[in-house]
Image (cartoon, rainbow, N blue to C red):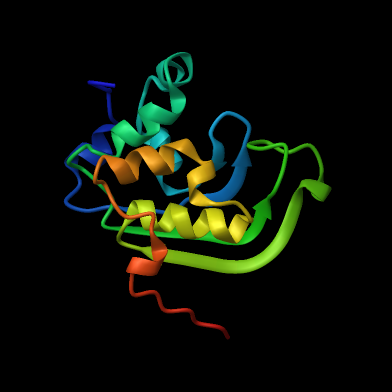
Length: 146
């Protein structure tokens, strides 16, 4: 993806915070921080018509990136996403993931979801493009349990 029409509020902002809800997605495997950025792009159908996984990773190279990613993983849609078909699709996880690294946020979310980051192509692509780090063992992670 070489260009995209981005919402003016993002373009005009000094900083912004990305707040996705962790959920299953039929086309992208997961919706987390990287995929959530589709919401600021006008022509999302182009992404679906082209290579969705690559477009998600490509957008993460844009200079206007979130300064913080806060992943809501309190109630998580584990199947039939992004819309779900019943309450049985949702599980209570009572979790939250915060990171300035959009790729690390998604890698940690994938693990919380029960899959490996390598099983989500856009996480692997974004890592390879130098957007962030999917290797969580190389990061200083703090776990807070209340």
